Image 1 (cartoon, one colour):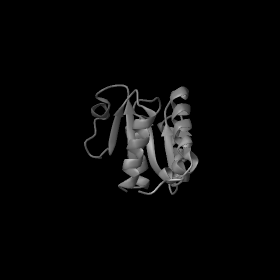
Image 2 (spheres, one colour):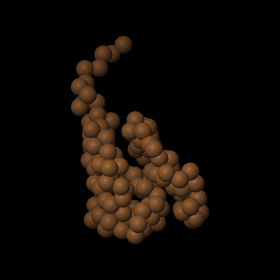
Image 3 (cartoon, helix red, strand yellow):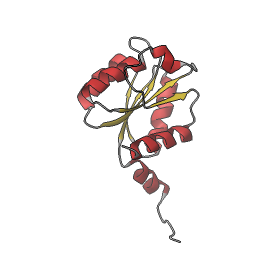
Length: 139
């Protein structure tokens, strides 16, 4: 049996492989908590406050964004529609859409696009990290 001598920082770095996550949420506390959590695990994180800002940032940074974590219901543009716009630029984009409403995905009302994952709020940092890692490992 091999003994791992990795430090916590090295383990986090190997888990994330310096991948970039775009976090979109209109709630500042949630956005900052997600950013801190993801950065603690070694991910590079970009943030946006709504779907419009997320799409503008995505247009500039799409080549480096590996996955999007977005709230579903936000002012200006909801997370589902923002995801659809981003998929036009990067088909097959990995995403986790999050909502405090149990039927958040159904509320989006579009069966023409496949949402890879949906999580209900509140989400646990550990659960989110596990889901992200699973999605990126299956890429």
